[in-house]
Length: 239
Image 1: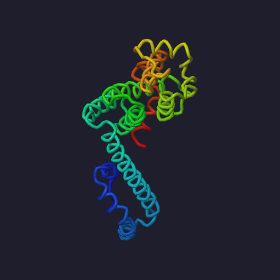
Image 2: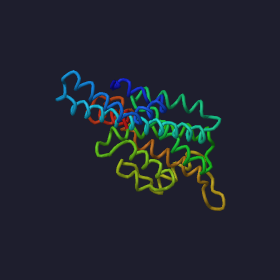
Image 3: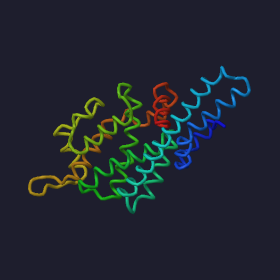
């Protein structure tokens, strides 16, 4: 009568079935009670009810996760457009290599892409930048135990792209005037009406973030067996 937890774990791919299970929960639970009493197992009813309630709660959580995944895929397609296929390959490879949720990786990449494109960065270039910054975000999370999680770090990196430079100072990244001038010179940026383009400034800030965080590069893979990274991986997979 009761579904197995393995079956519940398969429900994200079948939201309609999941919804039907939750809707039928009261009838299923009552049937379970009658069956247990018939077998003379009345003492186990409460325990069975608790276990079933947990299973139903998990099922609802997976419905929410499936809905979030669908929204992420939709936004991912919208912001990468003609580069979506290449972006998906990059996201899949990163998720597999780092042992992180594909939905999380896609969501982070889409968020950065959606920040860069309105600043005037070409979509194909923005794809390269978003991939690099998401990878950096995971490494910075691993390298800096005081970081709450990758979501928080990605938020800080995204903010830095648009000029909120204070958000990354705690990671040892300083975007002072000298650093910006050097990075802008490196990419050959030129002023128009005495001002650099937003896209050029975003590119310069990314270069600074990558260069200033060299010690953290690859840290997640090197320390993936640590307790902190195992917990972050678990959170990524179940949230």
